Length: 388
Image: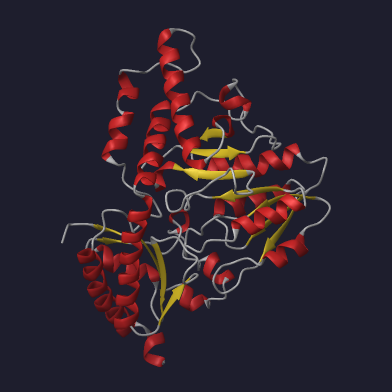
């Protein structure tokens, strides 16, 4: 076995060698400012716009509908704050879900302090919202619906097309956080009824610190960062060209073999799931059984703490997480699992396994073998297990 088995690709991925190669010239050789008029600036501007076009190509949208940000969190913030400010004369009501990433939920909490009313939709046992409940929540003053594309903890894919149609019929702006969906599914924005879509490079073998917000032409959005005229006056600040180049190359690479890679990764995920459920009693697989991204598996191991599982697996060189990397240091139960009705004591024993293109069947089998030993060891020390 290799020294490290990395099963935390939903937290981040390592930069693909081809991506790094594409980025390298833009740190030293081509270092101009894309806003400069001289030839150094023009070269960089051309590279920047080519990269923008490459990303737009794979999303089937216009180049000018892609705005670069520092990552998914900034893109989410720009979307929510931008719409709330641009449409405040129309209304002050936003609808989201209980299983959103904290980049959405915490932004909504801040908006509430600013006088915006927020409705948080419940989810079913699979983490899905109800389109019928969404319709009921819409008011005359509703200006935005924000529902994530694929959940970062359980992998469940929400009914985005149906949600978009509801929003469009009600003439409400619809935003989706697609950070976990990009690179796992083909997204056609020429057909999908989405007005704003968030993405990030470091989930698809690109660099950290670069993301983007798709803004459909005609969508009203107020800038939240001020300075120069950059990014069509939607996001001031000199563009991070090297990282943008890397983002474009990463999205190109993941789309080249998307179906075959997804098939391989889904088979490994199923191998892991089957190995766990057949060899370890009293586990709960969280999320939708079929409507999910191919690389993610969330399992609750009853009577043990997730932190203990993580540390014990780490000692064997296996990297996993207890949920979102942004909250992995928190001792609170996952808000996603709690919203799905998973009991708190069970949710505390949950582990997120997220696979990537380099994982192998041998790694999966080794992980299952280690898990069997780790769970047995932790349960023998658990007073909850002894009392059952």
